[in-house]
Image (cartoon, rainbow, N blue to C red; front, top):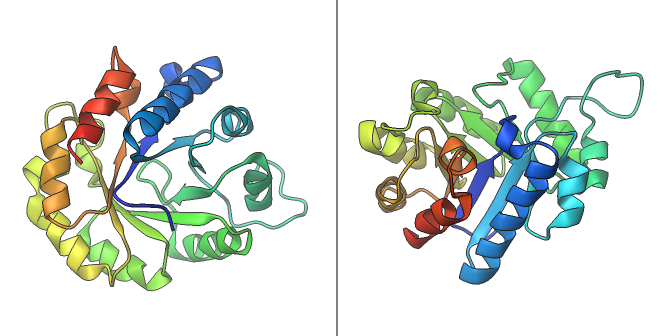
Length: 220
């Protein structure tokens, strides 16, 4: 298990985090991790994953993995391929890549078979109560209506929901995301029991990603 609190930047498919930009941004994250001793990871698209993994020593996650094994699955993201490319794990069921429960259950099993750490995303405390039964390595709570917001966050708008997910998690570490855009959001969520954070645009779209990341880490 990774050291907590864990800070993960999801590169998504923003132009600032694709190709050579992905490597540059990944190296900035590694430098901050070395300077601060903080537990920092990144989640990158499947095409850039191997190049990024070879460029840095911090943990690299995939953004999605499919419920497939070796075989005739053209176009699918194979768990074994992610592992061999350097991924330590994968996000699953992100609000931008939702899965039905059967597919999700199978994808979690396939990822586990390939020794990939599984960060299972949930949109609400009610869903979290059901998904915790699937026994992921981390539970990532992100209300979809707040994802990408630069003014509102789950910490500022719905702190009670963070506490509820933590209470329902059965000891599974809870990562908080959705609109996390300032250090105060980190402080609030930590007090409520969060074990990590999943941030995207606040870092990737920042004019100075290194400074933005350091400001968040300082809040730890």
